[in-house]
Length: 280
Ligand SMILES: Nc1nc2c(c(=O)[nH]1)N[C@H]1C(S)=C(S)[C@@H](COP(=O)(O)O)O[C@H]1N2
Ligand SMILES: [Mo]
Image (cartoon, rainbow, N blue to C red; front, side, top):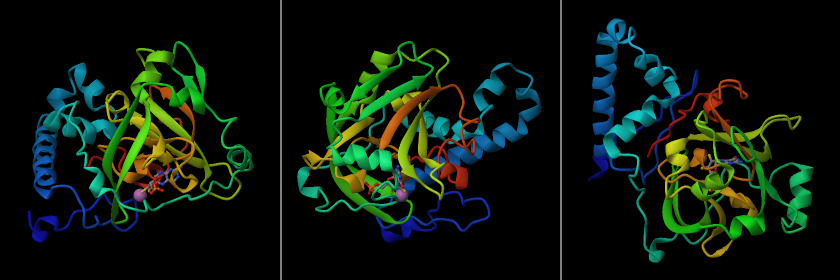
């Protein structure tokens, strides 16, 4: 791959805004182009066959929520189990930078942090048989995974870090999602606007939720997760872009749909126009 392969890679432009360029360490352009061609041909097919397809029962189920289309296309090509690339320790970026919130402006969070997060508990609510709370110590004693991966931010930077965390699949096995649960929503501690009414949030589908590399990370590069990187718990969902990796996670909510949550697009940045499925 040469530098020319990285031409014109952009995320879908936010509504009414400028498009966001990739940084230098973007993923293989060839795969993106391939996905793009697949997307284009399926889009063409769908448009051509729309009237006929929409008569069937499965069509609304399959395409009823446009936000899942990119994810379905990516999985059609790469499979549910496809792994994000992992790296040797020598590749770790010495000082993993912070982006977005570096310290949540939230008195409740400040009190938890001041006490070393000993009183923190991750709540799990929504469509589960057994709603639960997990202290940090409980999360640290659950089945875990340690992985060295590259974080790609749409703002044009990447960094490689070693993350350790509880497997989200292990936590889901405890709370037992209902069959109707289709998304895990991550509610964070950091308010994004004046008045503290709108904290950061994100959501992922169940295939990413059960993926082996999807963890609730409590350590970075062998040390407790720094506050600037999301302490005490931040999501790692390695096949997607940086903004999906919710920091300062306080509550998980299992839902069938996120249309009634906040702006209805499944995440803080999605509500500003970014893609819900942010595949790398
Ligand atoms: N709660 C919360 N999570 C967040 C953000 C944020 O501002 N608040 N920023 C996102 C973005 S855009 C990126 S690139 C990563 C940055 O993670 P880092 O601070 O560990 O580098 O966190 C993501 N998760
Ligand atoms: Mo980002």
